Every structure is written in structure tokens, then in C-alpha cells.
Image 1 (cartoon, rainbow, N blue to C red):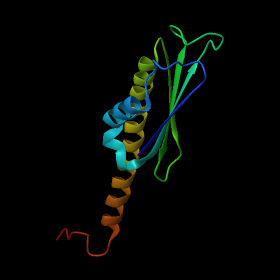
Image 2: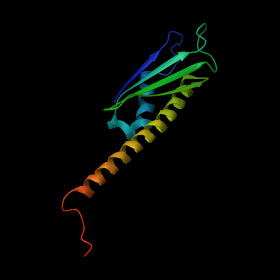
Image 3: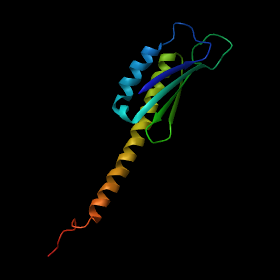
Image 4: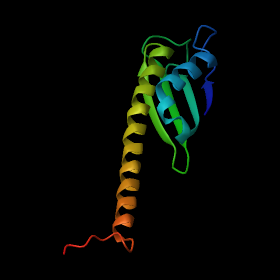
Length: 125
């Protein structure tokens, strides 16, 4: 899984680095790792006239999935770390729900195929 961090020009050197982002993304999204090809994080300052301040940080996470449309989650917070963690929580919930639906559809389709396969019918005699 490739992980990229994009920021606007209003973040100084004290903001989370790429390594921190990679660490927390892998920790939270690790269970979905084989189904995700890329995660891009976008950190922006809502009040771009000054350096990032309290309550102004927006994090957008976009997960690119194998054979599916990308999934996006956003969170606003006072710090970049809080914004990242909030967006990760939301993204994790959305991905868990999406993959659960996919797995259920696969299991249902697979089960239906097994039921209609010749020789799989049981005799009631």
C-alpha cells in the first residue's frame, strides 16, 4: 500500500511527517492492506491567511481500492494529528462496511452457485 502526504503551504516543520502518517495508516488500515493500493492524505488549513491554528485543520483521506471506486473520508480538528486520526477512524468504518458488503455478496453468490451445480441436490427419498 502506497501512502502519500500532501499539505498546503501553511504547515510548518512541526506538523506530522510522512513517516508518522505511514505508521498510523498501516496500523489502522492494516487489516485491509491487500485491498488498498494507495492512501493519499491532504492536510489543509481552513484559514489560509495565517499558519495553521486551532480548529482550522482539515484532513481528507482517499483510499484507492483494488477493482473498486476510491473511498474518501474527511475530518476537521485543532491539530493535524487529530485531523488525521479522525479521518482514519471514519475511513476505517467506511472500508469495513464496504468490504463486509462485498464479502457477503461474494459468499451469497458463491453459495447460490454451489446450490445449482449438478449433483449438489440432495435426495429426499
